[in-house]
Length: 139
Image (cartoon, rainbow, N blue to C red; front, top):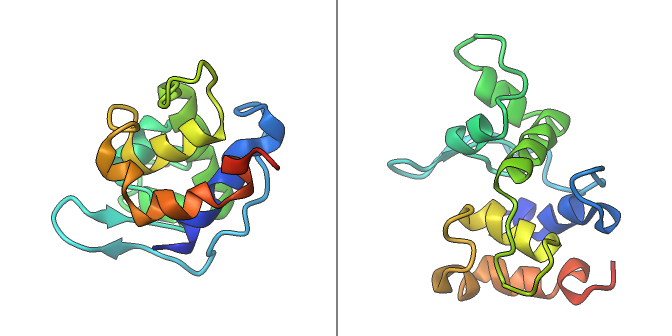
């Protein structure tokens, strides 16, 4: 599992008032772009896809052919994409009546339409997330 997966909750927790502010994450700033197969090209410390970046408002888009990669390899720009994506797709994935960091972590990994899918709940990503301070409510 990528380091970004274990720290996404810190970004989204943001003093329990997301999306009004973003917190520091401690993510893997050395992570660049990787292609792990068809429809599996992800960039930056949060390993974001082109469609996620586009849904997030395409921050850093200057009309250049590599604006996607340039933005997502910059932590601040990548966080703007996450902020935009969560503003667009925020929902109560676990049905507890509150949209919080648990929902944001699920949306980040699985997208808004699969954020309550069993494969996510059974994943290593989710097991690591469940041990985070966000999931335990102690942050």
